[in-house]
Length: 372
Image (cartoon, rainbow, N blue to C red):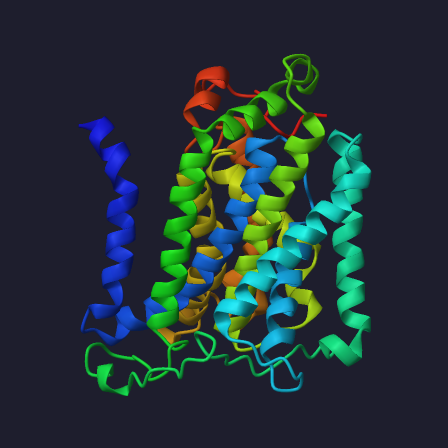
């Protein structure tokens, strides 16, 4: 029974999420609309998991590829530029741009390992943020590019979906409205999960794991560490670029460079550590716990705390104070959760089968991929 549950809980969860927009309830519709960014961040975390979880390269600049994908998508679609490409063309371009930049910036650092590689990738992420901020003529600086409302396919008029508004509450009339973009992001996440699952069992996936465990031994067995690293970076950066394109479309703007800063990279890394390095379902669990808490649960709790009935539970001198807001404690909660996880479950909430077998559940065991 346990094995059956472990095998089918993820497909069941995807089916439930796909059916959520069809629930005739306004509250359910509001919650579903808040889930779209989670699907995007889950894609970003899966891209980082290819680099950190599969290959063991500690990368701290994945937000840079996220931003490159978003801005490449924005440049090709916003009215201020003459390109005016469709979603399909711009999304492919965003993936290719992020993958190419990942390979170009990683190739000179192939000899670096551990902390040194982490510092270089962190510096690259910081540089991309400054470049985006200072290229006002292209990126609009801190304002971001908008509006991002591309056609779906090149040369084909967008369908009129206004007749479907009665199917569920909150349904829009354009293809990038809710729930069409919601279902599209969910579908992209599902396809990525399946592709990465097949890749894990392939020759390339096993080679990545061998590289993660011992690069010298992998090289002695005839594997090419440099090629394996570049392949992992290209795939991970490409997935991050796709996530950036979907993020820009969901927000109708690229947002400013602050959306792609070092904090984004660190939170994404925390998600895969919390869920389980190298385990795709674990990565999704980590994203839904951390990002879901931040974007969905925290606003609900803040609203609940501000209600008079709840405020009356506190002494008068505490009522209305900033420290009563849950959002003010989110970084503390993130840090405390990571400390507890690294102490009691170093392999994550849902560790990969290989990692669980190697590490067991003994406290204090090092996390694979994060050693020097």
